[in-house]
Image (tube, rainbow, N blue to C red; front, side, top):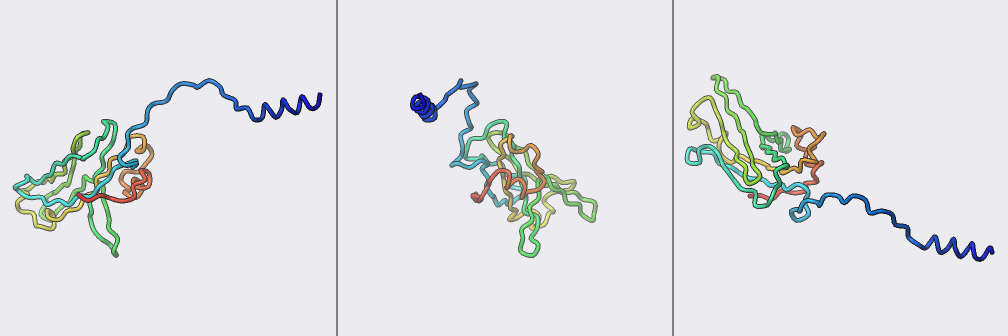
Length: 165
């Protein structure tokens, strides 16, 4: 009898148990080369001929619930680049106000300048060789993350490197 119980226990131990399959979950989103959040860096020259704006497609598919964040290279301090979330506003001594801003759809994004004065009077330091990082964040990753903090967004989305356009 002990041998029969031991054999039954062994047979039970080597038999896998399976229950109901449960409710099927949602399909995952198609990734871009395995990245959770596509991100890239662009250099922009704003001028009268491009109406002080650029519009660019992503080159990949994003879903309508994704959030696009744009950061601007604002300054370098002790060799460390400081990135700020756009929009960014600069107030001038003469009362003029300049704003770097953006908007986006699920097909493209636009970065543009807006000012309380004629943009043709801006110096090159405000219009030429301006660097921006565009980060596409799935909506599920944005909850509870301080989007003002560039480093927090990069950590939350596992972005490791930037492609330059």
